[in-house]
Length: 162
Image (cartoon, rainbow, N blue to C red):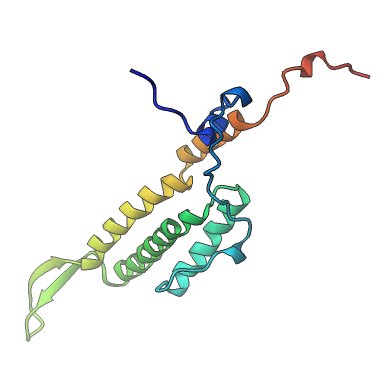
């Protein structure tokens, strides 16, 4: 049974690209060069827009953001904005809400719904943040790929030093 073909971009990232073994695949994604090329998705509040622009600039600088990643980054920004809003609400009201009757007597307690919203938003932020390299471990992995993808001069040791 034959091996499946490896895409040329994967070969370049792994540092195993040799001209004689490239498939000629030119289906590479367009990397976003500036923030002007991106149109913000509709429905984002001011906090989410700020987070989106901040993280997009980081990804553009590292040449990681492609056109198809914009929607995923919008999901990340919305989830992060929801985390911030949920944390503010929990700081104001607390995690436990006391239920009172008409005479202001405490008759029970319930968990604040913002607590569940915060948990779900943190899951989304962690899931998408790792994919973009926003966690320390994922940054190290991306840096390792960038180092191996850098072209090496095999004859650097043999060049004349003046």
